[in-house]
Amino acid sequence: MIKQTVKNIVYPLFKSRPDFLIIGAQKSGTTSLYNYLIQHPQIIKNKSWKEVRYFDLPENYAQGMTWYLGNFPSKLQKGNRMTVDSSPNYMYFPHIPNLIKQDLGNIKMIAVLREPVSRAYSAWKMYHSFWTNADVAQNNKKIADTRTFAEAIEQELNNKCAADIYTYDYLARGKYVEQIENYYQYFDKNMLLILNFNDLKNDLESVLNRVCTFLDIEPFSEASLKQLLENKYNVGIKSEKSVEDKQVLEQLKTYFEPYNQQLYTLLGKSYNW
Image (cartoon, rainbow, N blue to C red; front, side, top):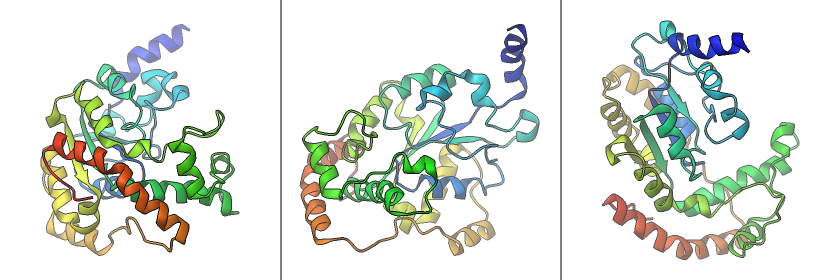
């Protein structure tokens, strides 16, 4: 007990906290953005996988800040560089902004928003592939979605998901206006940089320049930027859709329209989704 208490006091003196967060959205290019940013000379990658998931997994949060800080480089390793926690579930769950403010203070955050219909379909394809792909890891098989896309959407619309079903929330996760408003209750708007997934996909140079300005670091050098553009990740690769899936996707455009309009009003800009 005494040993653990001493560790809790001494550990933060040597370990660095994240300087910024990538909070979401799920299936919106956050992994690509993280991989681009850790190639910047003023940003250092985590000791663990990019998704620390401290604030969204109760079993992780229960281990406290000592556990959380253990996922980042020491202050000596970090030097003057920045560290980042990229966990896309942070944006979705309503209790998380309060925890972040409580534990990390006024930290800068980045959110990438993807057109919600395509985001929902991409998420379903991922979870469905956990069932159809024989080579998937056992942990992922436990959260596989065996339903068709139409079944999954119908059940969520009618609130008929079984009590023990994994929280996919294909539709709820695309109601970005609710999630961003929740963050604005705890943080000033200038602490949250909101990016468009389409820009990340089609105008990477402009997006990275915006991120560097937001983080107050030097822009990527011309040579580094050229290399990044040459090796750009394929974000949101298209695949064939069934006739049934296409019909559901068209219906969802109407479903999301009022939420998108509210988002545009909140942000003062339109994404023309």
